[in-house]
Image (cartoon, rainbow, N blue to C red; front, side, top):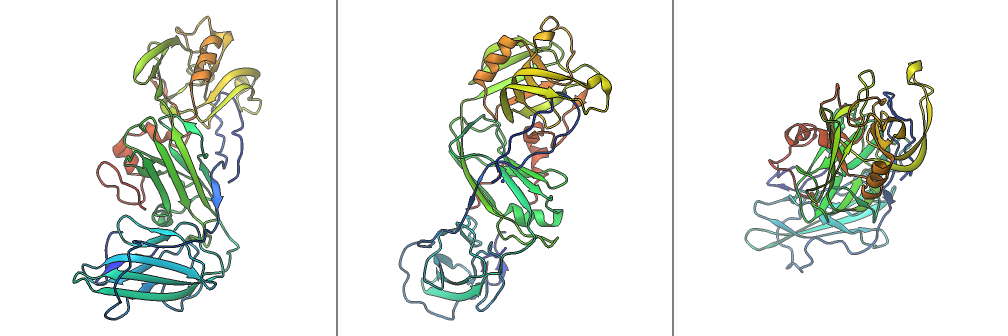
Length: 420
């Protein structure tokens, strides 16, 4: 990562589509599948910061990074300059040997200029940075550098967000990595994970312990009608284990109306709120003591109108079964769902008999299925088991103060704005 500096000091700092296989209610952990997000390629075109025309340069050339004549630069390279105190960048251009321009944007902290797409492997580029000093004089610097050849060892990555899809208000931005990102590399990777919201809402990233997933969320649920513009700009990022990021992924998703489900084990009732107003109450049966449901805030990850739960590989013979299921909504990787359970309707609201799922009547399951979206939250409280971190999209099961502790970079109070 490169940075603009002043007087030598630093200033500021998935597209494999796969279904989520159904394993049924139970304790067996299913590993996340890589899904979603489009991989982006290079994009020619004009590349500027401020498009105003600066006056003729004066004074010595600005030192740039990458330096002139450097070779084997990552395709994730950003452009920076060593600026005099008080100077501001007015324009950045980056062109290849044929003179084709590369589009890009300045980071909001002014530290560097970020190409909109990965640079090409094994390609020579020329960068030019124009700036205006505090006294109004113009400064300029130029550098020609060459990117590295395509690496042989890469990490796999995924982004669970699809263009033009509408999600619930608790939909986190979910990124996945295989193998996981080592702790020493997470800050550099996180700097290349860009989220912009409209209307603007602050947010933060949180890494799961093994580095295989990172979630992005705001302090509160997204505002209905929010647009999420996401770029996971991993292509070419060098990691300490000798691997490189595989591809850039981009997606734009939308947030729909607020639809929130809450389950209380004490009453064995689910209350459903739309737009903050109670719209339905229904009896439930949760997991029995030997296979309890998880307490915490979960998110609907997948919906299947008809499916089969097959738990014949469960180590406990008592938990092995094959059952046709209707209106299933996955909420954990470990096999917990909201679903129709006509066999338990006679005890719903009074007794827990499931293998960890939220059992509701067929009529209520159908109604929920028709109303809900992927990304809608369900909070369960009062059971014998706490939701395990990473067992599903668990970003909302933590308080905001707990969540930001999982960031690899400092998070301003209240959350960070967009990086570019």
